[in-house]
Figure 1 (cartoon, rainbow over the protein chains, first blue to last red):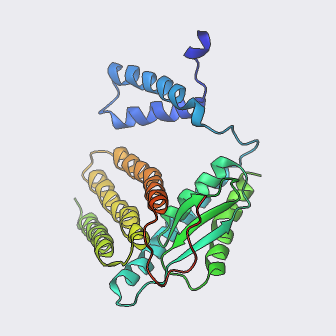
Figure 2 (tube, chains in turn orange, blue; figure 1 turned 180 degrees about the vertical axis):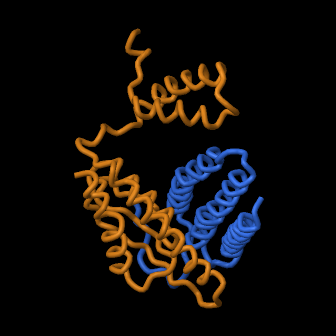
Figure 3 (cartoon, rainbow over the protein chains, first blue to last red; figure 1 turned 90 degrees about the vertical axis):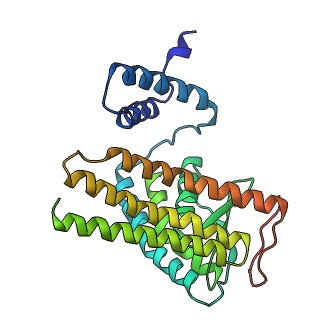
Length: 162
Length: 110
């Protein structure tokens, strides 16, 4: 019974609690209580979905990675916008991307990054978690896409999750 | 509100609106399902980002505090957009949506 009352994901609980305080209009008794209930309930409900924590994660590298991603989103948005407005037909391609990352959390961060940056959407992951299927809107060759993703996103992530 | 803040807000709103519009045009113009997937998912990233920034600038310059809720909205959007794009792509592959003729490579089936 007592383990039902614990916080299995302390960081997630803390983030949920703080997020709820920011979202509600000013901190009050009610928002504190509801925040606590959410911070306890959501991790309990989603417990089974969380992969085990990575052995070592250099989270201080995260801000630099996010800045690179944000910058790429801005740059690539312009190129996609240009492509949409130009009369030229896009040359889409399905790329099988060989993953070097192993941790599920790292892979899902990489997949989300790929989907967020314009021009590429990660469509699927192979059952053995070794390949990622990516749809690129306009690319001259597979290698171009694979190289770009590997140097810009996967390498920093591999550093982070070593 | 200072003129500088007003110009910044207007510029950001125009940029955000333009990108959302281009995303919508992309949805209408691009030839097949998978390429159309790119339009809306991207328009949200930069379009909403710019609109959110303008809202932050507005509320900070009128002295109503920095808009943390706007930033949270963007964070939620950035977290959910890839997931929905991924689900759409998976569903399309599952029912075997046709791809345009000059698509290289194939979606695998497993």
